[in-house]
Length: 322
Image (cartoon, rainbow, N blue to C red; front, side, top):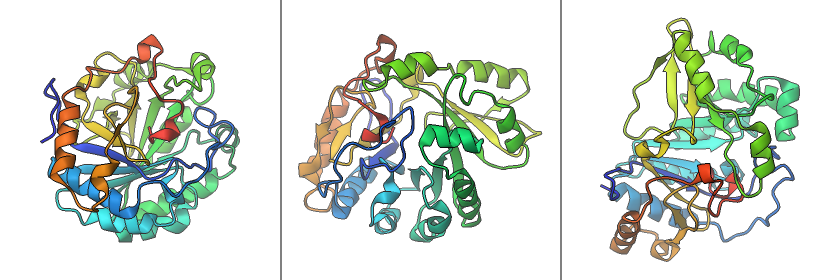
């Protein structure tokens, strides 16, 4: 089992398959993707080698991220290959929902179990302003297809003050929809410092409201993500909060990240990644991979430095998939 010097165990791997994204979200890539799609992203065999290596080290859950992972032409093959790895109990993916209504059923058949869909507003005009795409109705239809295909679906929204912090429409939607709506605090990155100061909203304000209105916390599993989830007996759906600026947020860290170029990131906001790609070339998990990851994990810090306005090497969240 992967364990750092503080006793934190790492059951969860976020595996980026591409940096490319086709949305222009105001909090991440307001000018669109500026890089060049390249053929140097991790290959299918390298992704499998990484996944098998981490499964051998105790990883139980893998989440495919981007950029936008569905832009990989071989994403169905990636899902199929990784879903058959012994020890991986949950194979999940985060998507912006592009063409979700056409592809969700194929992903479920390929072996995907869980899908997180980014929907930053339930208002069509606001959604268009945030993402640069007038696709909310299409994506909402995709949620239904995904659910009907047997996928466990959650919805992500980046919480922005004065933009989407009116929860009335969310409460109305969750009254009858058995989904989890998770609000993620805006995080400061080197590209978005002014945006952060203008729009950051503490998730704690929502947490206090939920508790006051009878919502109850959900017990987290060992491979669960960082969200604090809440349920209410009068609602079909749940609300989740991801609050990286809250006290002791990093104390429960259980996840590591691999970038689409094969860099291991011990933290989303680390100063640099650790190149593990040389250990993935054989297409199988190697003892060298296990050794190098274990050695570097011993140096994982207590927490990030976001409160000091230090986001490490992170310029925008599409680099490692958040």
